[in-house]
Length: 193
Ligand SMILES: O=P(O)(O)OC[C@H]1O[C@H](OP(=O)(O)OP(=O)(O)O)[C@H](O)[C@@H]1O
Ligand SMILES: Nc1ncnc2[nH]cnc12
Image (tube, rainbow, N blue to C red):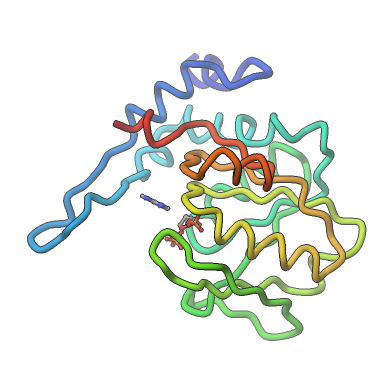
């Protein structure tokens, strides 16, 4: 019943937004920590939310007819397949050197500008899974500076593919950046308290 209520409707139902906020927590990592950290694990534990996330993320981009979803390690690996399934397209993981799954074979790499932690993040995609004619929807849990999204767009361009936009659960970047990169989100950090 709740699954139906969360998943129905062409736009994002208010019920899903409220539920995402309820299931989110800021956690104090303990002594010496200078920042609270986000805990989004409640989104995966709740069946209705898990079922509703993919359709809600892709709905703003259906008209752009994506042919593939690309998401970065590692939280993106949870959301990307949900979004791809909702669209009926495939999923391509974008690897980071530290994710323990760096594949063999021909890869296309890009390095991000400084991300929300000030890191230049290296990302790589298998060449055989992305190419000319692909229309790429980038999906992630959170966009802060959009640095990693930019690196994924660079990879798309190097492969001759077209990035149609980025869909994330939380979008925290300046509106001008969101416009430039066609980023949409289900929540802002203001929603998360
Ligand atoms: O907009 P940006 O400044 O680029 O930051 C957003 C990215 O950072 C986080 O991932 P992180 O690299 O922390 O990896 P994780 O998924 O393993 O938490 C988040 O999941 C995004 O991928
Ligand atoms: N997972 C995350 N990704 C990017 N920015 C964040 N700020 C808090 N949590 C974050």
